[in-house]
Image (cartoon, rainbow, N blue to C red; front, side, top):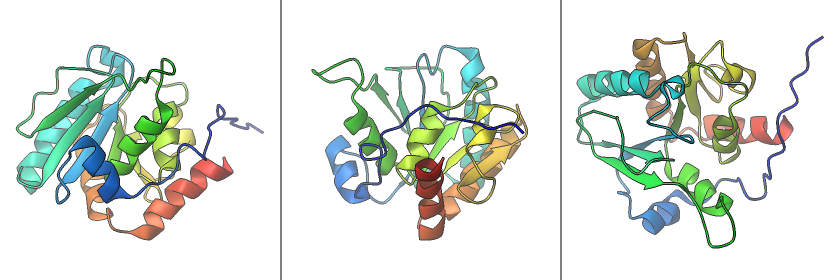
Length: 194
């Protein structure tokens, strides 16, 4: 028997917050879908899947248009995401109290309609666990550590590794479920009960 024991996650900090209030904090639009992506060296490390993400976002734009979608990237101040939609680069989420600002990061997850974790190599997927704890579904590649925490079509979507078209299908699935409280609760439950 194989048992996955995820790293500890403070689910009292990583929790769902009011989307309207959180979007006001970051000055994000209220009526657009927000697609979140982030990791350390998120746009410079090819293992993080930025090329596949860019390709997937181009497919999403070709299918849905650009009027109601924006992307948010944390962990980078500029980058390689080359797509015809507004992209907000948030940099590292830090505070005066330490290297990592968990409360601001939790608010950022709460702003998003979906978090994308397109890593081609991933041991676990802390970003995915944090997003789920905030009630935000996750789209990523199977055959990585994300597969251990994302339940396909329950709290997120798993595409075949490297498949930008599948990643785009997952993003669209998540955007269509953006108001589905069952999906959001399933995401939170997975993080709390893992």
